[in-house]
Length: 184
Image (cartoon, rainbow, N blue to C red; front, side):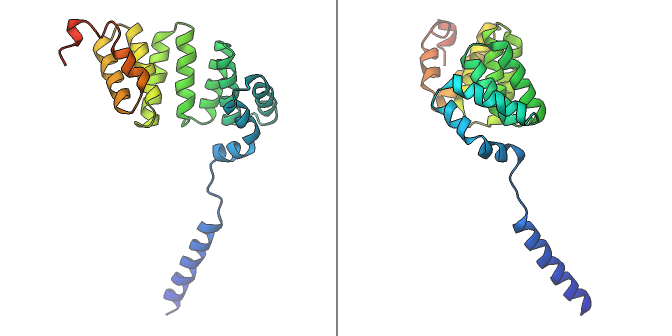
């Protein structure tokens, strides 16, 4: 009798503890904290957003979100090496941010480091899990630079299946218009 009462009380305690506990990840909390800066990035006001996230990085040096958004601002302002640094810092704090892999890959691509770009796009494809066709398209573009034409075509076709019109356009351009690729 006492054992069943203890088990019941312990179960109630665990249920209450579960519902009281904060389940937000540090990245979720940072997204809420930096909402003003995120809105600046969404409004494409990258100069003010950079200033905002630069201050945020100084105030919260362990914030993956602050580094990621500062990196987005750097990328848009064509400061590619600074963007790579910021994305690397963000990933070292929280390695589950798929956007960071995609953006770091774009920065590597822009500085002609196609192998590194391909690796980042490959990670982005894995983390996005068929949710974002941009990762497939960028991986295909980097594969073209690495002369991996059949795999590039497969990536572009996958992106088209996910609704990417840019990939559909790329498939109508050389080298995909040659006879070798028209057998499908």
